[in-house]
Image 1: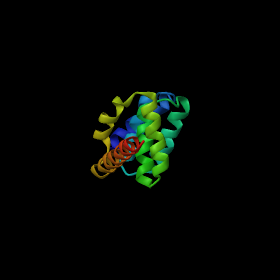
Image 2: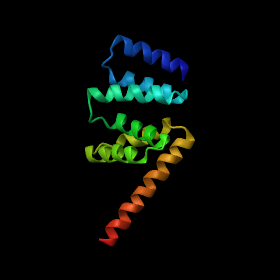
Image 3: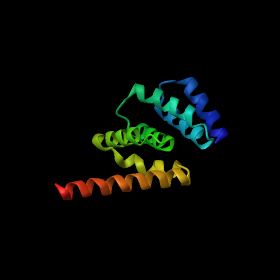
Length: 121
C-alpha cells in the first residue's frame, strides 16, 4: 500500500483532475489505515463529478465505518439511483475483511427492512 500510495500521489501531482489516480490514492490511504485522509481525497474527487458511483460507494463505507449510518445510507441510495452498482463488487475486494462484513451486513439489513416495509404496505 505505501508504494501504491506514492505512485498514485505522483500521478495526482501530474494531473490533479485524474479521477482514477485520486481513487487509487484514496484506496492506498484506506489500506494504510489513514481513513480521514482517504475521506478528504474522495470528497475532493467527488466535487469534480458528484455522480460517480465508485467514489460514492467508497465514501459510504467510510461513513459506515465511522458509525454514521444515515450518511452511509444516503450515499448508498445515491449509488442505486444513479444505476451504476457494478462498482460495488470490485470495491468489496479492496475493503478489509471487517469492513466488507460491515458493508454486507448493513446492506443486507437495509434490504430486509425495505422488503418488510413493502410487505406491510
